[in-house]
Length: 315
Image 1 (cartoon, rainbow, N blue to C red):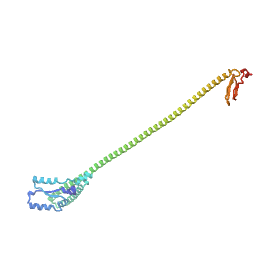
Image 2 (cartoon, rainbow, N blue to C red; image 1 turned 90 degrees about the horizontal axis):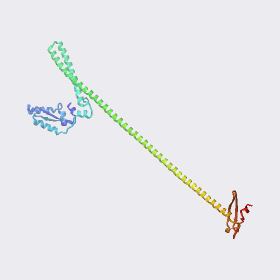
Image 3 (spheres, rainbow, N blue to C red; image 1 turned 120 degrees about the horizontal axis):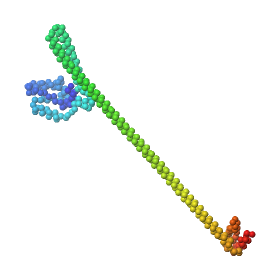
Image 4 (cartoon, helix red, strand yellow; image 1 turned 135 degrees about the horizontal axis):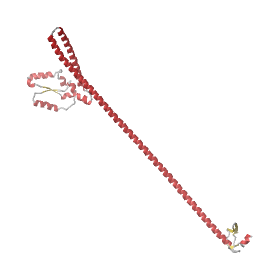
């Protein structure tokens, strides 16, 4: 059981100490000490690294043992490793299993002894041996107490195991719930981030579409305004040309009327100088609806006008 409690790796830090050296002969003490090295006692522990030490019952001897222990490298016991690191119950550890097996063996041995004493007590009753019966009854009571104690200890060990398993299940459930909560929170966080990203992308897309729409509208408006400006300029130019043409036509009419009036106001026999090879046509307004076209053909020299008088042409 001690070996299962410590483990093989820790036995190098174990001191197997003998006492009462001041009460025995040194030679006899050494013989007893050698007997402890037997495999049936401490031989197995010593073979695995434990050392046999002597305590002489003095302060100096005790301090010497303490100093030797303090120089060793501390190591955890097997029962500590199994219960703390491996999360075992006491009954699941090596020492717990060994202890449970020992309790079972004790209960079996005590039960057999109680049954044997009961048979002997029945024989004493039949033999009317009251003294032996009383002795056997008392011995049977002692063994029954030991049997009950072993059963109580085993039940306690099992109850501790059940309680530890229950606590472990609760802790495992709590851990699982915590992990599940953390996982769900992480998933919700990822979902929220994805949703926020999607909304941000939608907003960005809407903003981009609005900007693109505004840009297109601005381009369309600028194009329309440019076309409108060009059309207005063309219209203004057309109107300017029409005004210019109207003004020119008015001036031309005024000039022609002035010229015709001058022609009508000339006396008969007035000669018109005409250059050779030129033609000249004059429109004379004689009346409200009468026009006289006079064609003068240019020849060398001077041509006398055939106009006599307005009355001559009217006849």
